[in-house]
Amino acid sequence: MATGVRKASLPCWPVEARLAALLPDLLVFRKPQVPEPELAAAQDVLLGVHVTDVLCFGGDILSITGNVLLALWTVEQNQLSDIITLVAKCSLEIQEKFGIYHAKEGQDLQLKIGLSAGQISQVIIGDEQWQYLLVIGQGVDGVQLAQHLAYTNEIVLSWNCWKLCEQYIFEVEIMKENEAVKLRDMRIITSFDFDEHFDKCLSYLPHYRTSAEMLRTALELNPDCALEQTLQKHIMKNLLKKIDEGQPMEYISKFRTVTIVLVSLEFHKTVWLLHLCYLIQEVALYISTVIEKGGGQLSQIFMLEKGCMFLCIFGLPGDKKPDECAHALESSFSIFSFCWEKLAETNPYQLLPAELLQGRLVPISITNGPAFCGVVGAVARHEYTVIGPKVSLVARMITAYPGLVSCDEVTYLRSMLPAHNFKNCQRKL
Image 1 (tube, rainbow, N blue to C red):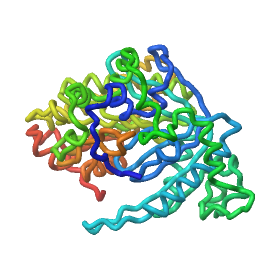
Image 2: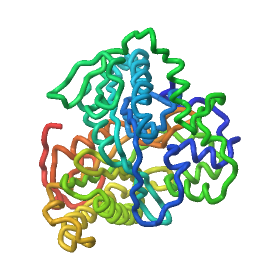
Image 3: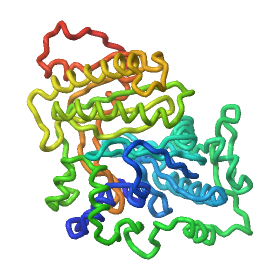
């Protein structure tokens, strides 16, 4: 299993394969949809895990966000219990190999694994120029809760996952008033052969390639101009330019100084799912437009239990500007005003009461500093992401300063904006 990209002759791959390696099968094999947000439901088993790779167990890696990897197995309802057993075995092997990794720098890498099962909905956010895949629903909420409840080197199953699995196979500990269960081990049962079970599960996973090194049929697709154009919409333009130039992925990764903007929207639990998607679409289009004018890019959109996060980056290759901190602050204030005032007042889809988008529910945080900007993952599945202390800081600031546009001291100093535009509001992070 890999935590970094191996040296490989990626420029020799067809363009479709290089694009597919950056995207989940859920997107690569998705049927064309209408331009407006449309929900597609499926039964899934989800695995949330830090710093590892699950391709060899047939998982479809949805995202690699910072140090969190999210994977899923999409199957029929009557196949869920078999797949949960497969994913549990995968998790136990990951735990054994990578549970606690002692780094030379003195900081240990700690593994926490969450599993869930149930229905999720897939929706495409964006327009004809750029698009993002979101997964929303019971399964996503469950895996986030399970991972939150897990301590270092623990595997936690959501309660719904526990109800759907073959319980006699597992040794578990019930947690927190039937909210979740902690997986201890798999029982040794003479009538159960995991190798046979593994082969059975692979028959449920049409995109898993057992005989090929790459493990994904997505990397063996025939040239298809329509598919290529579709996949390009899901990849940031600066990375797409590097792919078009045939640059090896290992040359794209580097440490550089960037400005990070994180926008958080919190929604009421009673909001209808489709209505929620329309609101996210409205906000995403506005954020993308405003950020790009200042030389930034909307990098990722991801769902949390209480809302949605929009991660924007200023200063990526080809976008560097001397006044990027000022642009980031000005863009953030514009986004804050749009989310708080315009959406709350005009309510364009007449879907949400105004109190669902009060200022306290639209925190925005900005940091500036060095970060790793590059590709993480395995050859068969990797993503371009931004990782570093400033990314962790921007996430903590979102919680520490609700209802505010906040920035770190470096951003404030480098913005060169008048001091009266700021208020010192330091808190322990």
